[in-house]
Image (cartoon, rainbow, N blue to C red; front, side, top):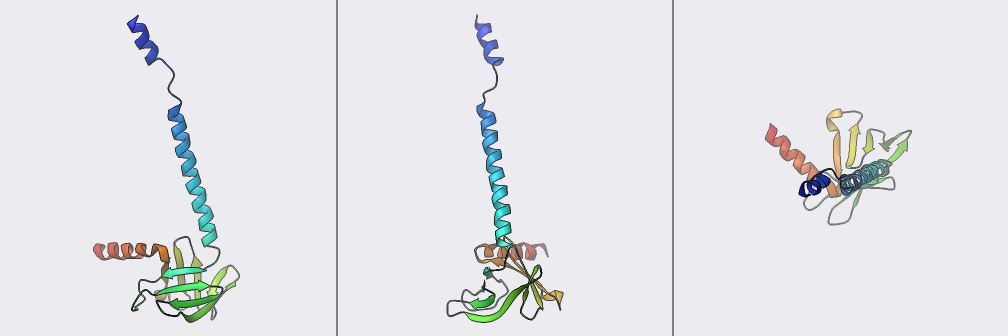
Length: 142
C-alpha cells in the first residue's frame, strides 16, 4: 500500500507551474527586446537630446543640447548657440556639412568628414557614467 502511494507520486505528471514560470520569463524577455527595438528606433530618428561630453573642459556641469536644428552648449548659466544641423538625404549633418551626426539609443556619434581623428561619441546625459567607465577600463588596459 505504501509502495503504491510512493510510485503514484513519482509517476504523477509534472506540475504545470514550471512551464508557466518559463512562459512568464519568455514573455518578459520578449517585452524587453521589443522595448529596446522601439526605443532604439525612436532615439535614432533624430539627434535631438542632451549629451554628455567627457572631454569638454569646463567649470561646472557642461553639456551639449541638440534641439530643433540648433546645437547649444549649456552649463549652470545661460546656454550658448554653437551651431546648427539639418537633414540631408539619410544623414543628419552640421550646417557647413563637415560633421555627420549618427544618433543612437545610448548617444550621438559625431563623424568629422575632414579629419577622422576628431570623431567622437557623446553619451546621452543620463548615461554619461558609461563614458567614465569606458575611460577607466581603457586606462587600466594600457
